[in-house]
Image 1 (cartoon, rainbow, N blue to C red):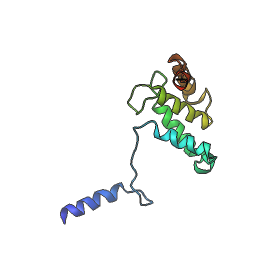
Image 2: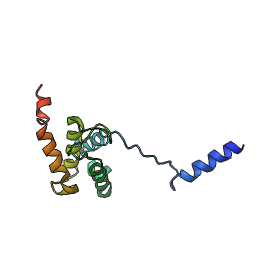
Image 3: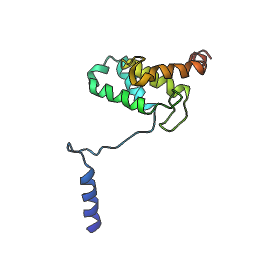
Image 4: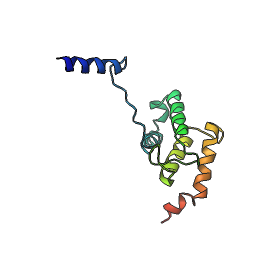
Amino acid sequence: MTTLRSALDFYSTIQADDGHWPGDYGGPMFLLPGLVITLYVTGALNIVLSKEHQYEICRYLYNHQNRDGGWGLHIEGPSTMFGTVLNYVSLKLLGECAEGGERAIEKARKWILEHDSFQKFVNK
């Protein structure tokens, strides 16, 4: 009973006010772009995501951009074409411009072009 009470006490302290248990699923940098691109293609981006949510998504992406301007497959990974293009497109779909996020878009575009652009991979 003591162990059970301890477990219940612990989980009740980390439970959110609305009843769910939030958890950081940070790590993979290819899941969030999939959501953004899907919502855009289906025309539901501005219906499902408020402007505040869109802002926070952009902020999350900015915070995990590598120093070289790209993104990896996960938050600690080296920049890859796949990760960089997905996150670049996501930021553009969310309405970000070159000045946003301390020029994150511009840095990402530069990284893509310096690595022979994604067209190299599309045309194979």
